[in-house]
Image (cartoon, rainbow, N blue to C red; front, side, top):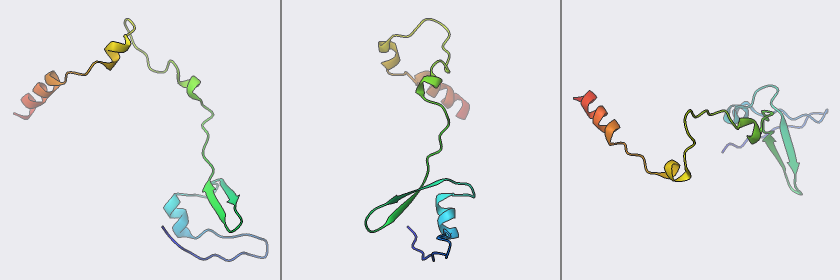
Length: 91
């Protein structure tokens, strides 16, 4: 956490100190939202929107073959063959 002092200009502008810009990875053009309370102002970066929602992602991962049952998807994975292959490579 950093603490700094800034001065309000005659135009009502406040320069955010570089250490804060670096700490939060804010660059020129970053949109900020300001939330007021009776004793302070909270400044946060406005979340970036991608224009996508969950429905846009459906169907992105393709599976060839028959559909898998919930039981098959939840079945523990047997890694013994992979572990044996890794042991052979190390030897």
